Image 1 (cartoon, helix red, strand yellow):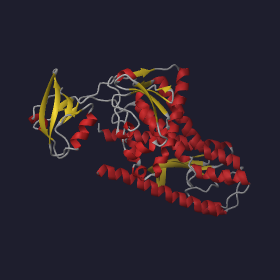
Image 2 (tube, one colour):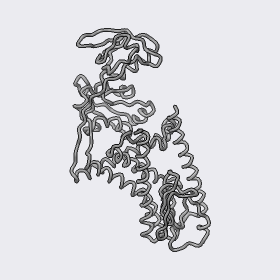
Image 3 (tube, one colour):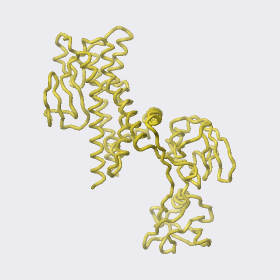
Image 4 (cartoon, one colour):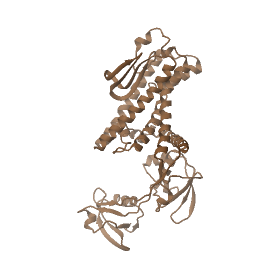
Length: 437
């Protein structure tokens, strides 16, 4: 089955689940406080609905526009902009008639459900599937560096022993820690066996983001995995299993080095030092216009360690994992306000790409938990038309004792809607540009 189709199905299923439960988070406290809910819809029902049924005071349905969902609460200024209803005297069952603290609970219900759901899914994942990590012994060649971290004293082949005095459970978490957690000191063991404590600048995350570098991946020796037929490499006599040890006399320690040298020698001849069956030989090969010679990398053989948890341990580990997932997302949100970060914003295509191209329940639930936590954070931002915008005005009302004028709320709601529509178009346009590019 087409991987794109599978990704699409997973995206629709995941978002449908999250939307329904988010709106249920508003619906339940609204009904508990005696507030009338006129509509409860998955997807938007502009002009018509695929399905709808009235039960009691509420019409439940499925719209045709899959851009979210909503509950229409009587007496509330929302995206429906029902000015006729708001012009009538307030009724006891309406949202606007309820005390500010009740309205605040109703508006916080959705993000609360999304946040708790994310944590609960992580707990379930830890109990059912456990967690997979990469330990130090699984990367005998150490880690790769990049120019930004090399300036700090890191070298190819380093192993990170601890960050800010804490051993790393998963050695591949180093990049994430550097990007968003602002470490101060790192203890490394160099390839020669010496250990060194390195100081890390506060802006290391910003430096790595702006450079686009991804250090601390497992260092892969430049061992050839395949040679393309009729390629410069094939014509020069290179074979699968050959190990590149030098190019133009410069020692090569990883595939990254190979790519850098090829890029600097486009359409030129280079001399390769090759280790083959214990012998060192040299071959001259022409680098093509696209910076390649027709060879591929040998598949990395990294052993994974699976950690399993009891039910009680799963609760602790799931909460811990959920906390750091939320922390890391909030910490990296600052990059959105940079030119480079804005260009990386994505819409449904980007979200869909988070899912695997084949059905995997563990990956599905893991991605759904991540999206749920992201939705919780995004919805609580103080932007009119989002839950956070309503919370902002309600907080003002509780603190000052003065309710914002309906006209102010209407104008703010319209501004928020146009802002979100603009962001929606921009993010999905980025997806389209990346797809066509």
